[in-house]
Image (tube, rainbow, N blue to C red; front, side):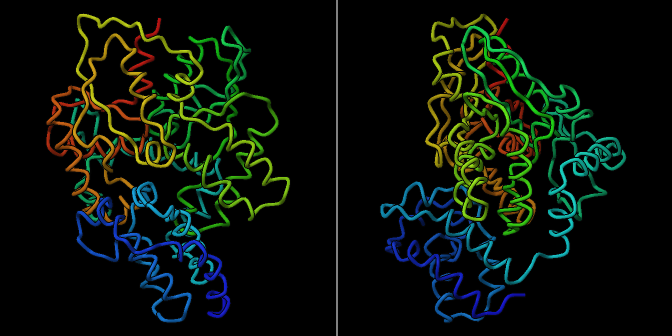
Length: 431
């Protein structure tokens, strides 16, 4: 455990960013968590005040501050709407790292993050065993959505309806891949991410189908690891660095034009958070991080921005009404919202309708959903209400984590609405 003097010295490195905050309260009006709790400490302004007080030795409850920092969806709504340009996400992530360095990880987080996640092959084996045994502890919840529920596991997972682990993960179905450049003249590295690999391998299949259709060469190493956001969100800089280094090793030796991902969270993590913590690495590693981050792009944005998408699609006779949910990390952090809609509107099977508050947070928040499920579900039900009100038969998005959250909410209400990734819709119409 580090000395309190060292902790306060480390926290002072954030003061320049925190003093920019004018405490105007605009973050309060856009915070999905405050809308639910009406607690000022849940707003960016309140958290910054707590951190400022701690760094000035005005607070002695370090655990209380950490608990407040952890009670955050990390959706980026505050940063995206701040008139002063305060990067609240950077402040909170770095503060979590500092406080965890002082306090250490809980035994449970240490086991999950350092004992499993930081060792990609071991993590793969654990979840493969979980996939084989999950039917023993769960039962079907919705045939339409493919969800399960579990009374046996309810003390740990609550009443949630979850999407089961895939029988065979994506990386085992496809292995490594290195295909030549085709008509597009482009080569893309494919980073599929944990949820596509372990739960939604069909998303990975759809990405490969779309890239192949458009003549894009693919480099897809099987050695890739988690992007590191679960570790970073927990303040575990050690595990985060191991995962970043594993991915640098997997992707760094090949030339490619872009690193595409179907996960908004992974895209944002690699593009924004990796460079944010580049100072924790060697100079050579930091340079590689910045190079890879600059090439990282959402799959929809890659296809649209590269001029590969045609806008001349004619609706098929059986076109289904579909709407779109904007993942926070894609729209608020990366300003990507037009491209996924372009993908849908170019698909003959999609009759697109806009839902109300399409860019409002679904309430997932990664580990927030695990630690604060009731609050997460309450926010998620507002999203569910907007989906149903749109009249769409399918809700689409660009983030597997958002898919899991919306699937849970729709399944619990027995709604006849399916959940799909936009690339699945687009690829299904390709010959």
